Image 1 (cartoon, rainbow, N blue to C red):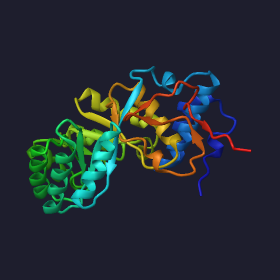
Image 2 (cartoon, rainbow, N blue to C red):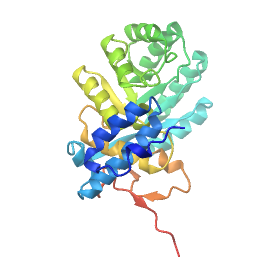
Image 3 (cartoon, helix red, strand yellow):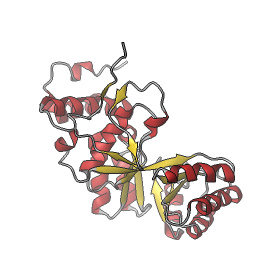
Length: 292
């Protein structure tokens, strides 16, 4: 087992970029471990100079991040009811699909009818479709005012993804297909997508996300951030990153820490469909005080 400890212990925080380079040289892959280490170092460095993390990342471009919440695959009526509850909280919607077009289109239609025309909706197929069927679905989604179709085909089927992009009337977004900066470059260079959905954990850290966001911004491609359900520490890093990076959309898939019980941290909350960027030092979250 490779230990990262020798590359970190007794190093100066100001060497953060060099530390990350040394870690990459020593260890291939393992993006989640690298992301956790880099996030901790960024938090420590910002705290050492008593500033919020977004200042170290270039300054504050926006003061809040609007939130998209996921609606899991279910019967149309159940999805519509859940969607209505989320919209009442000011949230945008991401609808999960099953891969069966005859069932997925009615789901989307039912949700749209329930929430009205003014609500942002994106659809996530999680690699479930082939190109031809995805194109058919995209045309049906356009009729329902869906704005983005995420990962319609399997992650490594780049030719299929490009085919869908060429024939889709709505924006096509890569998620699982964009696992690295190199993946993002390939997707953008070859005109395979309109958008990329990335995360600090998926690509291995804050600096890697910034590279992807800059590539997107230079090429007119939408870049959004997401995070899986977990402690709000992960979301805090994403919020500071989105707040300081113009190339990242202000509408991101965050806030899933609300469904976690026992989170030891406090400092973030979703209010009226948005997360305010913390003004405290570092990540702006802190350990919950134990009751006596």
